[in-house]
Length: 297
Image (cartoon, rainbow, N blue to C red; front, side, top):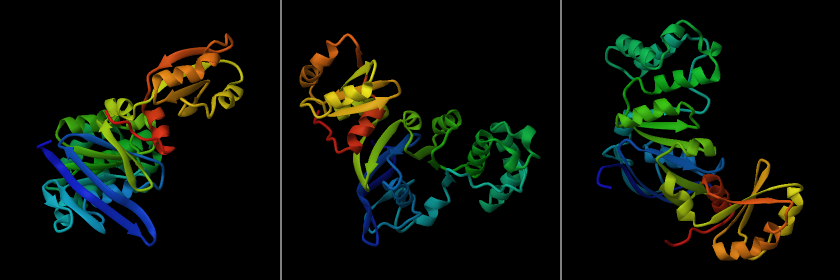
């Protein structure tokens, strides 16, 4: 990866006796949407803040957008746009006033033109005089993204976004995005994912390769009284994970033959409908979060 705009190694951060981030390393190219997937409190936000020079690491080093994260953090901050989960909007200001304020805060050249352009690009023109508090959640996020990109940042920090079509368009224009989430439907939108738990990176891979890297196979089973079936199968050698997905169980294991043997009697039961399932990010996430190891490939 010769065109990396983020290249950090060994980032570590403690808060008192708690290890928030433990030896995190990452390389990311320009225009990539990189997802940080993990439960709340896993260290996702702390990691992103260190990468972007917003928080000084206790150990580790690296560069972001060509600047040293320790010595040149102010230069990085100037080129970063940040959209939080709860949106940094002023409820008592209109759409236009929110954007005008952000343009002036970032010292955007020709702020009036920038605001008009942002409203046009994000289809906010007809809502220019509407108060932010009167917008629906989707329109608030659209306004927040417009505000975060007014100063044409090279790097976007996004907390559980939903405006994926616009984020993808920004990435195609060369903007790199770091996304913090614990939602699977958001994670699949990313180009690459890092699974994080307890401050440690458990796996990093292109989103489409996560299942193969984790190395488990999965069966889907539907039928009556799945709770009883769950307890019937749980703990059998060859079964590494059983998870409930709506009206079905997903039964997974690292060894395909051992999994087949472990489920043979249940699959012969006519009360249940079994089918081979493609292991997805959800199964991989559960497997990793419950202590599963990635197979060598």
